[in-house]
Every structure is written in structure tokens, then in C-alpha cells.
Length: 204
Image 1 (tube, rainbow, N blue to C red):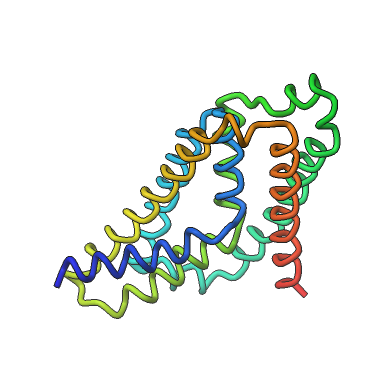
Image 2 (cartoon, one colour):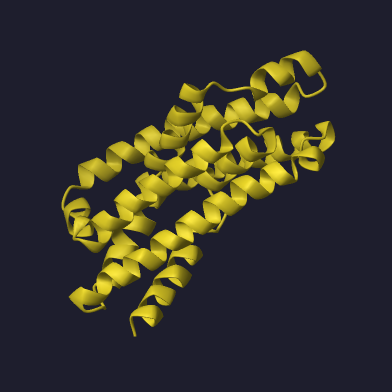
């Protein structure tokens, strides 16, 4: 019975995490560049661990009772995703300038840490998926089963982000070709902007 509960957590967690979003787009881009991609994936997993744990242990109710937190995160998220989308679009636009493209593609360890935290914590959808949805779904299980459900969701996060970063790094020789990288930069920019627009629409 506990294994079934854990499996349910894994499937639900995977269903919420795998769809393309700002987190996945950034981890993918870092994997292609082989630029602290394992670190980026690890930060995403740790954030999921904290947020999903909050959801399972009652954080969803706290978040819902303080709408100003959600509003503030939404505003910051729109600003950051718009700005970061512009950086990827600039990489796409200047891709024919090898020196400039190379300079823009490199990121320090601190930059990777900050950016990964930003694309994770400044996206209200992350809180909806992890804290609110995971939290509400976990309420269907008995108290002693919730830890197994939580473990399943965390296993999905760990499996997905490491597979994404390592897979992108493995395919880097092909994915890092100038014409392919240019398309990826454009796609990532469009994803960032699309999420920013969807967040802006929630404010209207």
C-alpha cells in the first residue's frame, strides 16, 4: 500500500514538473553549455523538496491566507522573466558574432545559483504546483501515508532534473552547434516571455 502511495506521488509529481517551464528551460540551457548544470538541477530539486514539504505539512493554507505574498512574487516574476527572456533573445540575435555569443553564454557559479533560484522562486506557478496542489492532494491520504506520497513527488523531481541536465550535457556536441543553439535560445526566450505574459494576465 505504501509503495502504491509513493508511486502515485511520483506520477503526480512528474506530471507537474515535466511540462516545459522556466525552470526546465534554464536547466536545459545550462546542460547544453555544461555550465554548472548539475548545480542548477540540484538547486531545483532542493527548492522542490522545501516547497513540496511545506505543501504536505500545511503550507498551502498559509499561502492562500496571504494573497499579498502571491501578488508580490507575481510582479517580481514578470519583471525577471521579461528581462531574462530578453537576454536569451539577445543571444539568439547576435549568434553570428562568435565572440559576443561566447561571452554571453558563460556564467559564473554565483550567477547560476542566483538565476536558478530566481526562475524557481519568482514563478508563482511553482508555488501553485508544489505548495498548493501537492498539499491539497496529499490531504487525501492518511497521515502515515503522506510521507510516502511526499517521497514519491521528490523522487520525480530528482529523477527529472538530473536526467534533463545530464541528458542535455550528453547531447551537447549536437545541441551546442551554432544553428541549433540559436533556435534553443529563441525557444527559451519565447518560453520566458510566454510565462511572463500569463502571469501578467492573472493580475488583470
